[in-house]
Length: 401
Image (cartoon, rainbow, N blue to C red; front, side, top):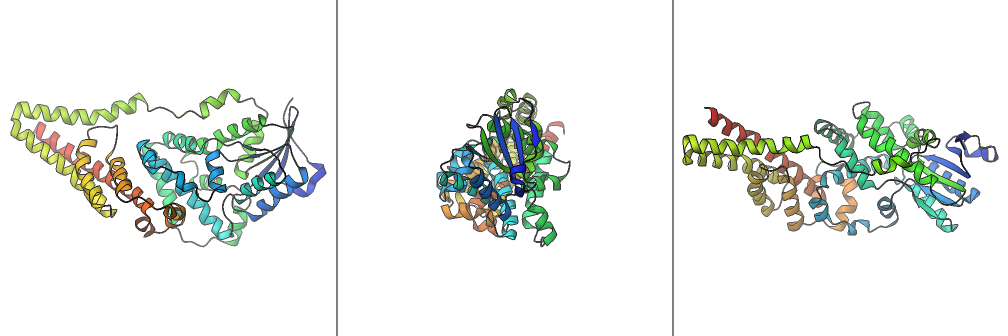
């Protein structure tokens, strides 16, 4: 049976934020919300109470649901495992986006996601089953990170950081506009067409995933609460059977062969060059080049750790690790030093909880131990990268000189 976005004459007072979609034997009341709007909180409560549906679907995955409903969700986060799995960068992007929403939410006097929490609580009070219909946030962030080129990753981080430190007062007109739309969509629109792959992962793929999960949820009368930025795309997707796409949109793309080859090219060239220097100019000359390589990598990485106010053992590990990690793409100096920093100076639970606020303050990055781990990761990684180019240039110069 074709899908239609039909009028909803029985409850015209819901306004334009509620859409009725007929799909097969299901009637879906799609409620578009702004994640920082008190009006959205009241709307979802009203719709669920008046309609008493068979099921309430939410734009949440299990992780985000636990984060909203459990005050101590940070206690279950194993930061060492995050680092081992090389997910520190995706965690940072997630924190930056969450902080962006929280900052705007503060302007409106409401906690981001309050309307989703209200929907869950109202469903629980009325004994209505809940269906968490969003893709796992970890998959979303990892796909988003992998879909973004190296230079656009820098643009993304710079844009997010700029938005955090921007103290410009938001006008009343802008606040009213934000109430009518999803904040992440607002962020994507501000970035324009510069990051189309990121928008595809954060918005378009999730439109498909959300719709398919709603279609498979139990019951014939469903209330689905989603960000307003998803509504238009979801209404288009209801008419299409996209079950076959689900496996693709939950897949984390593997590292391409080209990237792997490129990652090993520089280390092999450097090691090969040292071998040629040793055979042509002698072991002592090769030894001098190796010493230069160690110092060229170790010193900038150590300076990065010092700038991050890292633990002394972390600084020593930066000096020791950078010359080695620069010769392998398997792991970077930033991950090694971040792991040591977590062991020597573990963040407190309260610092996880305040990170979203501290991240918007320049000094907060050094005061908050969790954010300092990110600083260690970023600054030692940058130092090691600088050292790789300086050390590599010197070795190649001596090879051909």
